[in-house]
Image (cartoon, rainbow, N blue to C red):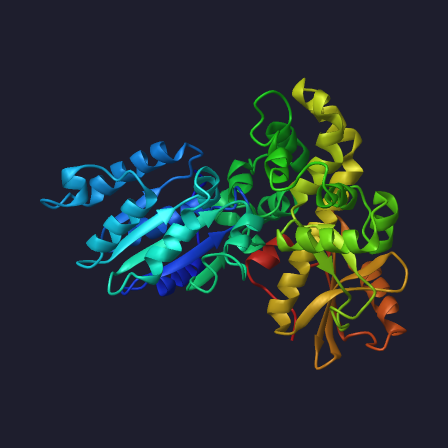
Length: 449
């Protein structure tokens, strides 16, 4: 399990939903995002019996046997109760038993990978609903967690048995760039930021990063050869999507460089409505970001661009998937070296996200990318306050950068717009003259007024 760091807000949200009087919380998030570590910490902090059933695809009788083992470990059977006299052979019996015990003290039940349990017993959500609606004064808290984000969303849809029952729906997101030091380790801000812009914010990815080596060396170690730690990572993500589906096809096309609705529709051959629906699904699953220019109405503007959210996934789809045999044979290093431009593009996109986040915090203003009517993005981050430009920034993941030229490019690009050029323009780079470096970012240094 990846090292547990941070997640204070998530722990507080779970504590609010699962208070002393009991509550129902739903936790969703992609695989590797750290849900199990979060739930394990929450269970350890729980003051009282906490029953944690790890994710299992076992048949219902086996899942219930494992659940019963965990109940017995934290709740000794009382004389004459169901566990003292026998076993819990149905979900209704198990939930009823926990509700009865929760009339005497607060009890926590965590069902990890809940969709697996529903796969084995489709009636489980209805059974839980019936028991939940008649829990009376039982102080039982239930946390349902799952990696299949779409199925977890369906649990709470208007026609689902648990609709309206959850006290909280917690969507666990990857870490941001600020948490990288705790996961990557070491003392080098440059290495921390290189890890983030190369593999993103998944805790497992960052914990596997070797801060002593550069990006290409790390990627070879992580992706190349039999048993590579992240060699099949794209397949893990794709499990949420039917490989032949429209969302799967569009995700691949975005990774390969199609960024506009028109490009995606044309290259996929899909109908406009199908394309739109598939892109909405990818955004909802946290696989694709829908970007619009700063200052424009997000839902009315026709200027929309799409980007794979996770840089490692984008790299995997663009380089590993088309060359699976080479990577399986341990020759993926050559593919990565020859495809270095793809890596540079992914790092550039990820750095732009870091720049926007940093500028938003520094300016306390609305920040977004900006581009003109063409396809070329020219400004990574434009900060607006009341519609007026406060500052702008651009990122260059390179050393030896002179801030003068890219700063002028940003000013020139904005000069002819309705926003006009801001007074402050910043250039974030690994090293250079007049630039904001990784060390500046991690020291929370900000030259913005």
